[in-house]
Length: 421
Image 1 (spheres, rainbow, N blue to C red):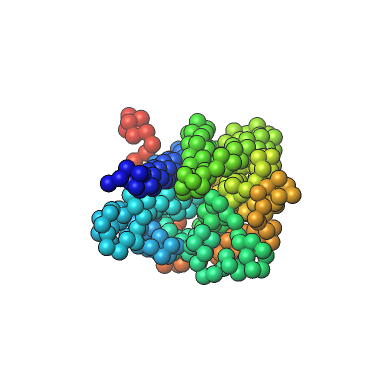
Image 2 (spheres, rainbow, N blue to C red):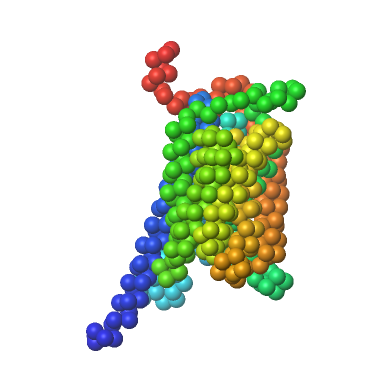
């Protein structure tokens, strides 16, 4: 073969292989974030529920993998994996190639799975310390196979023509580059429905409504969880481009600035509280996901700062005023900061404010509110159904003992606990 003629084919192969590696690295980074979810919960819950937090996140990821592989991915993108390995890999010689070369569609599945599995990981923090284990496994299967991918497909795959309608009605489609609404707001508003169906932890509020403090078990574990999430988030955002050709350093810069804004705002609003500071970083990152590819870095800083303040104010209001026992504050963090991020993309993405343009304030407002309403209704429906049929809450004695011993029959420090008997 003429070397000149083979050069384009070689270049195409190199680009395809580069995209596969790029998406795979993104998937690994977001997969690592699930360890962050786990340790954030481990540090926030009481010591008697630490093992349960670790097991829940890992099992939820495994259940999410199976549910998304067999059902969820097909609901969102119309693609299944019921073909030979030869065809799935996109190997040369396939008679009717349906899959991209070098297994690109497979690593894309892995990458998007890590987003889908974030839904139960988010919910886990809200329902901690009093939810039954197996009903939550069932909820994960329902949410990741049907509820989440239905909305994901509308926004990211154009299903049902809703994005076309948004463009016709408002001049631009709903823009959510990395999931402020699709992932975070959906997870946070489902979690609110779950928390309301469960009720508060035993002893959290007195009969008069007074809040009783349940201190975190470990600030270092909480901080480790936040750090793991922050690092992985640059895969979550930057690699949402899903190709080397589409990658943008602007996304990385905006993620960094929003994280800094969230930390500083939470530091001030939270009066130096370490829990608020470490969650403030996450609040900023949640909010910037939607518009990280179109905002100016100064706009991202503002968006992150507002999100950090939203988290602190609404976490305190949620616990004290509304008496909603959301253990990790996942509704304020993911639900409300995600909602803010979806709307903010339509404001700070405008060219008049230094953004890239191509967005509509009305499209962002309508799309964000619709996503929150859909998720909240779905959360109420799924958890109300499970509460009615199988029950979702530990009995009082099991809750008092802690989920570690009641569910897993072992505590976080077995050697010490055996020695103390």
